Structures are given as C-alpha cells and as structure tokens.
Length: 178
Image (cartoon, rainbow, N blue to C red; front, side, top):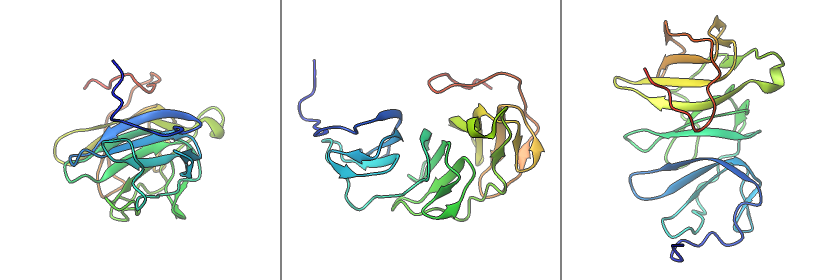
C-alpha cells in the first residue's frame, strides 16, 4: 500500500541510484537528476521523513552520485562519477558534513582512476566497517595512485588503504561481503 504521508511532489525528474537514512529520519538521495519536487538539486538531495525537501542542504557534485553511506555521526560518504563537490576536488569519493559541506579531513588523495575508459571510472558501492574503515567498490584500477582493481578498503581521514583487492565488478545494489 502506498504511503501518502510521503510526498515527493513531482519527484526528481531523473534516476535515483542510492538512498541513505540518517539517524534523525532524514533521507539522502543520490543519482542522475537536476531537481527534486521542482526545486534545483544536482545529483544529491536530502528530504524530511514526509518527503519535503530540506532547503538548507545543497551540496553540488559535478557528476552523478551512485552510492551513499551514513556514518554514526550522520556525515555521509558519497561515491559516483564526480570529480568535484562544491568546487573541492574529490575523485569519485567524498565525505559530506551534516550541513552538506565537504569534510576536508577525509582526503582521498588522487582518488579513483583508470577504468578501460576514464569516463567509466566510478564508485558504485560503499560499506562501512569498524575502526574507521571504508570499503568502496566500482569500476576503477587504482586508488590514490596504488593499483587496486574494483574494490578497496581505506581508512577515513587519509589516503591510506588496506591490502584488499579483487578482480570482480561490484555494482550498485550488490553487497560487499568481507
């Protein structure tokens, strides 16, 4: 049964690839869209539990958002095709503060590079582990200039990574099992 208490108005006018629920009940959407409920929002938006847009949250990535993960403190890890958010260079992965600004303490260095065609390089899945570890999967051959095929584990706040690599494509909606 449709829940009529959630009203997205005219929706996004584009694809939603990722949803994440924050601890306060707000919902973050990521995808390939340029508006939410008729209001400009580029590739990412946050809405209240009733579906109305949070007007104070407006990060601006320069390309699609494919994956989202909410951390225990409600900061949001974002993955996708983008190379910048809010004018800050972030190659395919970034962390946003609760107000939508880029968290500069999470620095992915050179980020993700090098699919068969660089245009296809993307982070499609993000999973959180204990002790500040983040798993990222997608279509890439390196992370911060170190060879890693399609899956990597990194530590938050630095461009370091653990020695974890696999030669399989990880697509949105699939789980990373470690």
